[in-house]
Length: 322
Length: 242
Image (cartoon, rainbow over all chains, first blue to last red; front, side):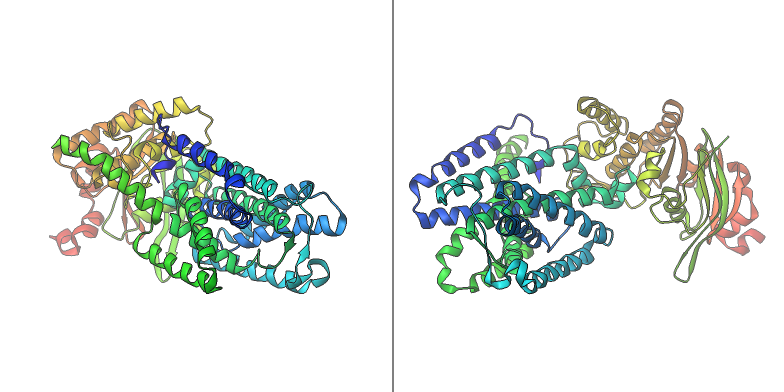
């Protein structure tokens, strides 16, 4: 978690970020339509995993409602556009706002319980939402899926890619800023020891609720963008399948690290294209790998690499001191 | 003038009466000691006062305000800070960050907070360890960090729960000097639990004695150490008779 500490003239982060962004900007020119689609979906998962990590990795609240909030974002702007003709660009912030409000309600209900009860309540919320979407056929078109328009203009994978990239950069920049702000410090204090945090004057419930609302709004935004890209919103977005995929991406990449979920999302999304022939079994495989990582390397792949790099940097200095 | 007043505080954990009808006051500016055999309810009393554990019965009045039932963070904001007997550092955060948490939401700018956090670390003997993760400190340094964080919240009343354990005689003398300094320079009233009998008797102006959840004696150290009930509680009835 060293990267969340205030940087002292450390330029490595921004340089890597700029390089990665430059590479991504070239994708529409070098990738075919199929891989460009994979990149767009990958960016959706980057937003999902990173915002879930803000909640689970930095405040220790394991919510299973993250995909549900993406679904709320998607169905809000989707229904408003498909049924009432509202421009998706107006529906998009409304979707994020409704996700934030429901996050406030659900969080207010279950955050005081904490731990496993938070997880169970959010799991139940997710299932309730799925049932409502499946059964309110006339509004949501259930499992048939709801046809929705593009975010703006004619359908173009290149435009969709840049929109998704801009949103992902925005979400990541916001998370980075939060982690380095006073709010991030209070998140980490609450995660490290909530009793000590309260004894030093931190309103623990409010801090956790803030994380829940921010994270829900980000999921709502991601889900809404994803829906308008797919042009068809199905209950797959607010499903536990998608939830567990996001969880696996975050855990394998590195829970509680900034880069971990980004890496995990892109890597697993690309990998799942290669092993598509296995059908839905890939989620099972990812789940098993995530279990293994959580058991034997809780810092994830990125955490392992960071630890190794830090040891290498410290190594020669330690030698000299001897 | 009384800074803190506790009237009839009681706490029950299942079938165990941890505290029964405890009443006393902490006077502004004093160093008040709290002693008693293991399991007497000393730490429970601190938990109740600081709001770490809810107070079910009785009144707790701090600076004229009833605080029983308030959440811990509100009580801290009113100027009542504590340390924990079983230390609770933010293990994955640096020592500096640990202290910075105490300044959150108090409207100081970043540079001022960092400077003041550094001062509190230096005061408690942690200079040079600003960037060390708190989880890597040894137990004594973790206790120092507890003290630095609690002081940084700017308390009027400080509850210290066994901060001297494990110190050698030189460190002990330094720690006692530090406590006097805290009281005199920062004008902080100190209410402390300590098992190191020599130290608590030497430094405290008054002593409270708890036994099995009841307050059995209070007064100046020399009076308390001669009290028959106190000797009984510590050594058993036969010694008191003999």
